[in-house]
Length: 247
Image 1 (cartoon, one colour):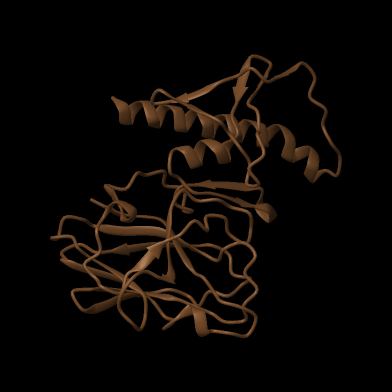
Image 2 (cartoon, helix red, strand yellow):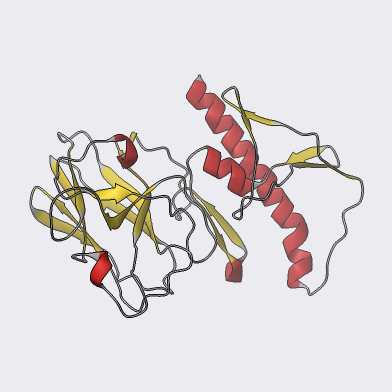
């Protein structure tokens, strides 16, 4: 029941946001602005699974839901963040992506952040959750070193052939100015099954969807040996966000 409630709230937010975009974007594309009359803003609460949501934008500023002509519109970024789903705005095509960028709104069976890595050279969770295009994410691991080990940072999980896919989003954190590049490789039972594009400071987020059916040992490894010695404009942090295993 809790899952159904979360999904209902999530899709309500998606629908509301798309309706807002449908009202505003055509006017912007035409080079003019539309003024909405009789809009009620303020005093509207959002509660998800019994917890009140305090919606904010990417800069932490409070954003209010609104009611227009009897329909309630919710701030999509705040709702998606509360539900642990990435949101991505593609300006050139006026498209909002939620969850996987291919449009599949799915919940992972288990998130990487909730699993224990068996490596002693673990990549670590990071609080860098905004990319260089202003999109936000709920959680991420990065090539910043955790404790122990040497060499390339990585995470490794024993999944006992329980899952069919590993999915997530690669992004470069906001403010990155390094001239370096970093990529990830995913190996399954010692076999490389995925290599990402090289990510630079101007790279857009990359959706990762890898088939891991029938594999037991899954390893996600970052290409750099140590971010503290990359140089050439500062360190380069690459994040693997909202990642999880799917049955």
